[in-house]
Image 1 (cartoon, rainbow, N blue to C red):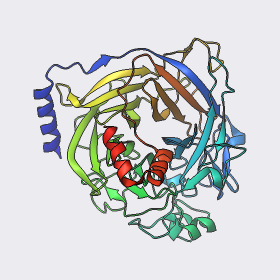
Image 2 (cartoon, rainbow, N blue to C red):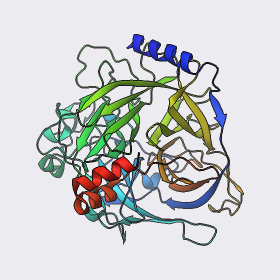
Image 3 (cartoon, rainbow, N blue to C red):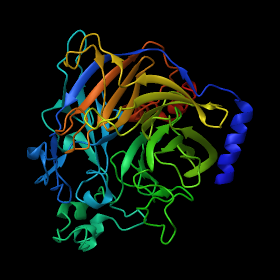
Amino acid sequence: MKTSLALICATGATLALGMSPQAQAGTSSLEGWAQMAAATFSDGPTSGQFASGNGASPLNNPPYLNLQPVQGFSGVLQGAGNSYRFLVDNGFGNQANSADSVLRMYAVLPDFRTATGGSGTVSAADWATGTARSSFDASTRITLSDPNRQVGFAIQADYEKYYNGSTSLNPSGIAVDAGIRANKLLTGADFDVEGVRQDKNGNLWFGDEFGPFLVKTDASGRVLSRDVPMAGVYAPENPYRGNTPANLGSSRGFEGLAINANGDRLYTLLEGTVTGDPAKTLRINEFNIDTNTYTPQQWVYKLDADGTNIGDMTAINDHEFIVIERNGNTATSGGTPFKKLFKIDLNKRNADGSVEKVELVDLMNIADPNDLNGDGKTVFDFPYVTIENIHVIDAHTLLVVNDNNFPGGGGRTAASDNTEFLKIHLDQALDVSPVPEPSQWALLLGGMGLMGVTTLRRRSR
């Protein structure tokens, strides 16, 4: 793999010698803003029995009896109508505290506050229709499950007690919820899902950090096949590595996951640097959905001098993508928050072989002439620790949403962070190739037939 990366760098230097690593793009402004309260819940198994609290928000502290927090958004798809479908990550931050957090996607409907109106609130939405619902319940979500036992290792639902009764992780011997066991639900101790895409067949693909793995499910979240590892890359949590040393940091797997317009290629972006790779470089790999294998295509993403992590990646077209890059600083932590959106082009490489980056948006410096979030300022900032959702609405409009790490805080204040939804206007248009998302694929597959879908995909390229 070192040879492969060296070859990439050498080829890049030949093709793009002297290319500027970060050309500057146009300006951005806040077009819409909405907020969902930190303490937003759905029915479900009791959660948070292994998690820590937040001293600044004691009323939000776990456990949550017969409830699951609607929080930790780490991936987004377009939903039906004006709704969006958000992926909840592993729950409370790591494998050792999230065994009772079930992996779900929720449909939400923001009523964006704009220059001409809007409440700035967010409601639950019906998964199938996108219409507003009064609360988050079974009609607003899907839950990941493995009833046919396709996952290649033991999951929490296989055990009688969480963590298989480990006295260090489960000293009280808490039993696995009966619903998790009966329905073989996946939890945050099984996978840390940080990205989601829907393919040309209507199936969902999830990018995981514990393997890192790709996990394929049907549209309802039921696992269809064995988890797909990345050859030669092992996070500490990888259940298959045995005595093989981990060469990727904990929770540094697939943070970015994108799909092409044809719906047959996935693009994975690691959050961390693989041991032996150049410092501050992250691997981008291409995955062929039809063959269920990685292709030989590989690229290098280089973090900014001030960047430490990426938060998400989404496609603009078949060779351009948007990446969220950040550091861990916030409005309360000290230090300068670095939170930016970059456009990358897989067809253009810098002298060092990394893909070309163009700054699209500085999330700490967005024009807000109408003060949509009501903070009394005409410049909007987004200082959260983790910002993990980016979606292209159209050529001039982006959706950006934070992961609030509930019940944690520290983004704007020490109290539990809310989830903020931003519509950002770009003055320079993106070269967008439409990527049909969940509702569109369902309509196309049902109403046009495979020939029609194939024709549409070809035209979208």
